[in-house]
Image (cartoon, rainbow, N blue to C red; front, side, top):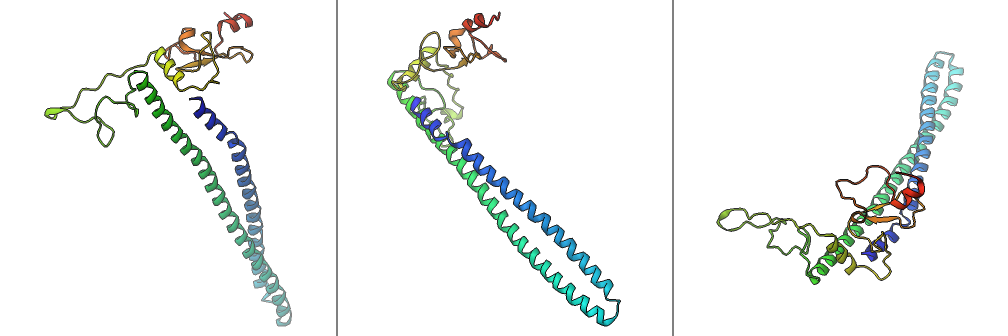
Length: 245
């Protein structure tokens, strides 16, 4: 179990920094696109204003109108070329943003697929170990040998067209969970709790950051899924140390 967890944790160690780098790149592209759009809007307004002024100046004398028209046409051409250039740059930056977003999606999806693969391998390994130890298979896993299943994963119907009665759900005991975890644990697996055993089943962490034990098995501290604490929880030693009741 530890090998799968360690492998996955090592694979995602750089994930936050890598995502931060990608998102910062997206933000930089957004700022550049926003700045270009502002320039394009200003140039478009300037071009419309110039066109309106040329229309009004068309009412003056022919000689003056010719000079004004030539100057206005040159300015209008320059504005049009700048608008076109900035529009092309905006499109290029937008395409780069789409590519960056796709890279982020693929990067996260790669880690999700690796986790799914590791989970399937882990479930298969646990099922084999449970079978080797003579423990009953957990229904719904690859080690469930309770009967044939259909292509869609559901139990096949029994004889006479009736539905087969559902198999009783086996809830593993604490000892079964411990031995199953112990069977696949590494030699360097750390131990926790008052019982000084490895991690298995449901556990709870003491909220005192200086707690020497840190993690505890539910059964060792009298907890169940039904009465799990909703707020902070401290072990009995840390309660005494912190003066809590």
